Structures are given as structure tokens and as C-alpha cells.
Image 1 (cartoon, helix red, strand yellow):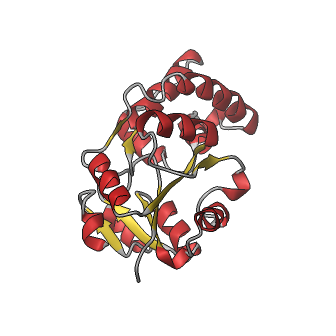
Image 2: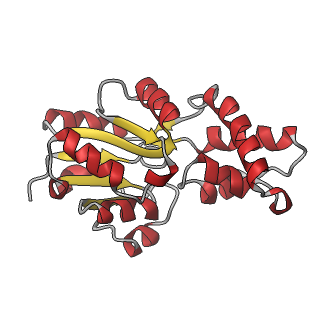
Length: 215
């Protein structure tokens, strides 16, 4: 099979955004006199969207829908102003993207981060590489639901079987499988490679340029 496109997850795959996310959430927790969490704990919270992360970060006794919604809104205000403060591409990612562009592959991003923040981050860190850039707009369509990624396939004019989906989480591997795309996991993200393999990864990248070997 000759692959014609690559769709990437964002957080934990292209960029390490954990510290900005954790710092923003901790500031909300502190403002409400709630216990904060370390980066290692947030590593386990990331992957299912920021609203889900807020729910996990709140104290169990305050984990009701109204408080989740209130703290999520507060988190978004803080994070919107700090989402690229410490966030950087992983080593080798820019070289990989340049190589893929030189090989005429189509590149896109699908994230469970809000659509607004996904676009802000990508346009600031990776201008001119990706189209379309899509984040979460509807909870119903959140990964691993393949709805949005299949829409990207149509927009790119490339069949799902000709697309590699690259991500760092079990959710990403499930998304690729649900869409009949080729699931590729990365070992440097927020989930261990054993989890990625168990959830369907057909190839694991230990270095970004390993993707070129696969191609």
C-alpha cells in the first residue's frame, strides 16, 4: 500500500504540552482552594479532551456536573493565554514534517483539544504544514469516534486505507482502527507503547524519522 497522507494527533505526538496544561489547571484548583497535582499525575489525565481532564483533576467530593463546567470555563480562560508558553515540538518533529512535505504527502491534524486552541497552537508552532487542522467541537464526535477523521479523509481526497494515523494514546489507535486507517503509535508521548500495541498500533515510532522508514 502506498500511503498518500498522514493525520497526526497533537498533544503528546507533535508537541509536549503537558506543563502548560498542568500549570493552567493547577492555577484554577489553587484559586478554589483545591489540591493541585504534579506533572506525572497530569500525564495520566491527558488524552480525552480538556473537559475530561478538568473532571479528573477536581476533588472527588466536588466532581459534579455544575462544578466541572464552571472550572472548565475558568481553565479555558487561563489556558488560552498560556497554551504556547512552555509547549514545544518534540525533537525531530520539524525535520519529519519537512521530509513528509518534500515527499508530497498530505498532512492534517485531529485533536481532542478544543478546535479553537488546536488552531491557535498549530498556527503558532507549525505554520503552513497542515490542512485541515481540526479540534473538538462536539463531544459526540470526540475520538475514538471516526466521524471527523473520515471527513478529513474526504476533504483530502484520499481513501482511509491510504492514510497513516499517528498518535500517542489508546484513543488514537482506536480512532485509526475505527476509520480503517493505518495506526502508528509514538513511544515519546503520554502512554506506554505496550498500551498502544494492545489497542491496535501496527507500528511504533521510537524517533520521528522512523516514520520515513515505514513509508
